[in-house]
Amino acid sequence: MRNLLAYLHDSELVARFQRRCGLFLVDGAHHDRGKTHASSGTSVHTDVSHEHLRVRWEKQDKNSNFKHKENGYADGGRSGPPQYEVRNWLLHFLFLISAGLGHEIFYITCLPCIHWNLDPFLCRRLVNIWVMVMYIGQVMKDMLKLPRPYSPPVVKLETRVDAEYGLPSTHAMAATAISFTVLLSATSRIQFQFEVGLLIAVTVSSLVCLSRLYTGMHSVLDVICGVLISAVLLFLTYPYWEAFDRFQLTSPIAPVVGLLLPLFLSYTYPELDHYSTTRGDTTTILGVGAGCCVGYWVDEQLGPAFVPRGALPVPLPTLTANGLASGAARSLLGAVALVGTRQVVKTLSLQVLYSWYRVPKNDDSARRRREIEVPYKFATYTSVGLVNSIFVNRVFILLGLL
Image (cartoon, helix red, strand yellow):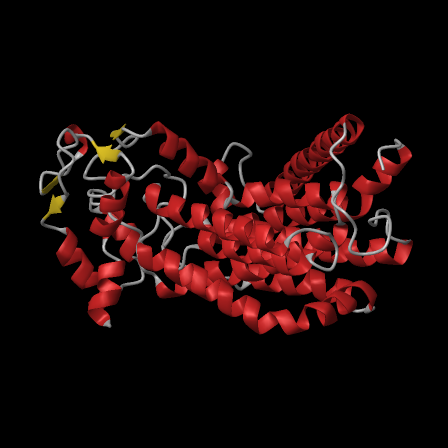
């Protein structure tokens, strides 16, 4: 079993997948101790990969991924963007787009469109599941501390999260959880052929998972664990989805719990001995969840602004010119409202926090400090969640768009 886990976590396995898909490191980008000849497409050979593999399983220090980067192995001992050759542009763009489907910014912009255009019930269910799986995945990353694939031999197409640890893949977790939550929840709300929905769920989640290998951000083990963890979470929580919906919409303590619990989890997020984007990203997700949770309760007390018309399950909306125009208008205006809210609250919260902690206004690095990062991100995205779940649809009604 140990050998199997080591094999699935090996960077060389990821590099082979990349080369099969037409992505190669160019000769000038390689570390002296491990070279791949892009022109010939031969397999990567690196003297350091097996030693690093042995070390990562036998002993993980608290800063292994960060030290790995400091020692020059994460980028082949060089700085600057990766140098690589693309031989299959169709797969290249397919996997880049698929990778984008797993980013937090995609969910923050996509899920509200479901709320405005299809069914707020589905949006609420998806937000709840998304927040749960993402928090668990992010915490597991920073507790297990297993590094991402090494470059070389892997081509790294993303750099923002390279200082984060790798296992499990939260892209794989989110894609699996969201795809199959839609499938399981929509059957009682919308008329569709289950087999078609299952095919779409499997296709979307598989593309996102494979994109994490193609972009060089996760090992095969990271992705498999992400899928399995989400599957277990869905299996364990599915019997309680309806009960949680009732609690979230009707219990008088729901908004208090929905606000204070995510705030507590944000401040108690595991500390690392180097800066990582995981805490900030997790606070963003928890903030959205908190704002939406409070907003859903308030919306229910005021009377839901938008529910599907007719007996459930309703037919899928007919694609007409007027329907498409109204949907596009709602999505555009809603996005403007959310982006505007984010910008205003972010600016104000940073000004207040910088003044409170007497930080120079031009000190952007101060945003990494927990006492600044957590409250400004939480306040910003809680406000975004509130605007999405309470105000936007009511504005649409006033404008005649709903």
